[in-house]
Length: 93
Image 1 (cartoon, rainbow, N blue to C red):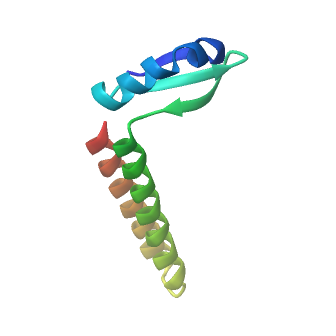
Image 2 (cartoon, rainbow, N blue to C red):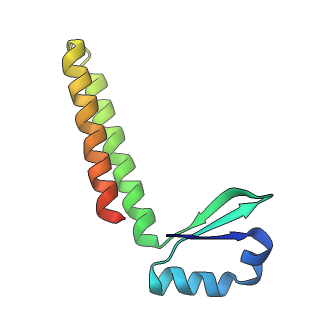
């Protein structure tokens, strides 16, 4: 589970935060005015999220290109895309 820090504390401990993220795979949520404002995660996690996002949008574009689908087929493809994205997300957790 990620640790939450205020922005002032995060600023003071940034080198330590980066060390923990890079070498221990930990994640941090940086809060500003008591609300989550940013996340610091390992680069591998970030790159994986970007790839998953690209793949999901590729599936959406593919579905849009098949505009002659009946509603049931479009719904099935959308459900498949969501299921695949969730499956990929759980692999990185």
